[in-house]
Length: 232
Ligand SMILES: *Cc1c(COP(=O)(O)O)cnc(C)c1O
Image 1: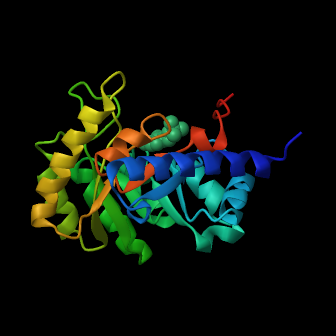
Image 2: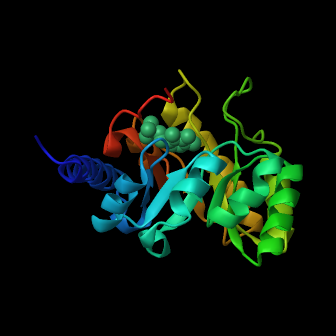
């Protein structure tokens, strides 16, 4: 039986190969793309393995789970922790204390809550505006028309650094078309905020389309760590 380390190393290698191939096809440099390993539902021991394999960016989508898993992790200092899940304002303090970058800012009240919480903690957080790419979005995000104003708000926040935009391709939609739309929103925001260069898009099933559309950050869980254990 192979060890968990071997399994994760194989998953990571397969994903790395897909990224390299997608970059080559798109005429992009591999160094333009950051792989964020999404560790939600998986134990802290898997994070330690990932860190040992050279992973430096990890993602979580639930405030409580992230806090519990990462607070006392010996390798925490080697990692950038990305919060990628839908966020309630009342969890802003926990996330501000735990994460380094928040990908899922989709409304003004949340920007204000996170900014205040980061200030209380004496921290600065990277922040992305999450863009909802379908109209009946159950997956969160500001509408493409509202995203630039929200980006202005993040840029003005004292303790947040606007990094760019994030999206999840709508279920059942063509990811290439969705990511092309995201790229337009990203360009519009970059016109006013030249440092907002991040485009967080692409998961296990659609990372090739995301790379092709200019993604700078891929959030990949299943293809590295396997099928998520159920909540039970
Ligand atoms: C879970 C999650 C991912 C990773 O999804 P996989 O299909 O397992 O790669 C990416 N982005 C967000 C927002 C997620 O919640």
